[in-house]
Image (cartoon, rainbow, N blue to C red):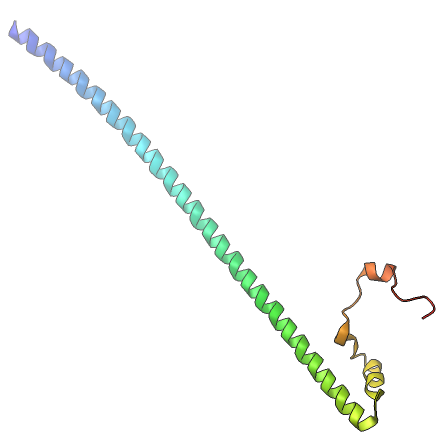
Length: 128
């Protein structure tokens, strides 16, 4: 019977078509999940890049700040030397140092404030 044979072939074709549709749905789901994963990874990379740029900017700003502080200190140092030299010319050698010490200005020429560690072990003899 040809009709029965055709019906069986149609059923087989429908089964094959259904299998292919199921495979396509699975592939579509896999592609969708892959796309979502890729978007998450891309978003993470963009966040990391933004954080890197922010850190780089902060580091550049910090370097600029340190350079400016060094420059400012060198300007102060040069001005104090100029004041000391001018004072020595007017008052005589050594007078400027006494004046600067009395005004607490010379401390910034060579030293920063001592750390607690420096206070615990003195480098100067006790008799000095």
